[in-house]
Image (tube, rainbow, N blue to C red; front, side, top):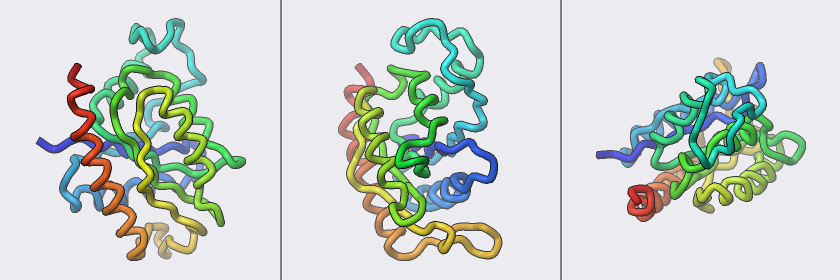
Length: 189
């Protein structure tokens, strides 16, 4: 049975490009063959600013949006966060969505597909790693970074990956699979 890879689209703003990269990664991961990829778009869950009355570690959610988000994240064995950079930091929607949950994230590896201008979203990734480790997520160093992302979109707005991006994706997916296997006993306990 293949591990589930949740491809988490971090941005929720109108006009965002994240879904374009998520669709490409979903197809690429499916072809890679070690995961069952699932696009998990934060925007689709309609999460307001954190609004649960109890701490997430208790898992006693009252709101339907939280329950749906919890089930989607719990189903994942590994994650790739498709993330832009906002003011040298993570997308606010991602920070909010991560903070909604606790145990659902535990003992799972995470990779990143970041995009942006010159920095390719790498400053956001560094900030996200600090947040994720507090929830017992293992961020791996292998990642996909896409600088000047608009140059990699065709006339229809679809992403055209070059060999460097594909090589990065292969390395990241291979490592995510290794880590997912290694952490599996901890998730079962």
